[in-house]
Image 1 (cartoon, one colour):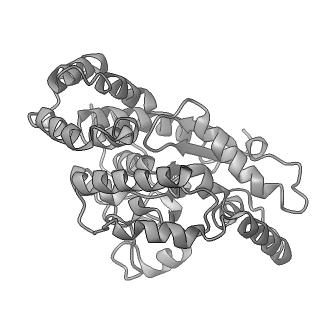
Image 2: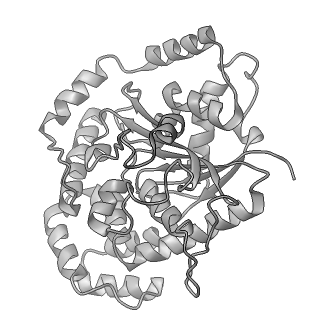
Length: 357
């Protein structure tokens, strides 16, 4: 077996065709890789094995049925329940969706993006986690320990990955359930990259697993060696119940915090959608550490400076101040709720669309 690193990709909210996230990842990483001396003709997809986990098939069925707005909410939910094989939704979902539709009915993103988060909080989310858990476990068992395993997750995918890993590496064997059991030593991950991390926000209204208390951390009690948290200064979704552990030995001991955890905050804007996965990865502040972590590819100081200078030149002039001014009315709190997420989501999509016009 070769020692080729394995990169598992897990997408965020919104429609994602199979292979789409891989394409964005490859193009964005190669954009910087090909600027590194001696690597001008190399491709990340030739250097690593990429495994894309796409759970969109679950939510795509939801979106299509929920788009039939002429039908009552109860009828649409019942149709979704049948095609997804669920026994029930829970008593209050009809009332919740009806209320939300009356508020966000004119928001296209409600049906293409926000519904994913809503339904992740239901029993459908449990089916997603089981499916993702089996695929992650299979990839790890087929490749570790000879091949180092890295996970890159984006947006809602950070919550899916966190919740799934916390169950895969729970430490106590539970028989006769659908979640495989992995060992913290044998199946240990090399690194996890949480891009636009919303795991703590989503947990605030699912209470599945507290990101500050789970095994998803870089320590002997955790399931990885390195944890990279990536956020854009003007990505409002990362600021609700922001994941921001302190070096006070509460999350992990100080030595492991300093050696294993890094928060990467970006600010450059090349596209007004600051939540976009490809734009996150394209930023050398993200892709260069990623290349160093996964492949030990490290540009010289002069080469690195040239790459950053080139990226800054390509950034939209004045975009940061303009976007910051537009976001000033979006109220961000540390109190997580589905309603606060949807409100911010609506304002964010309106702001981004305004700049497209």
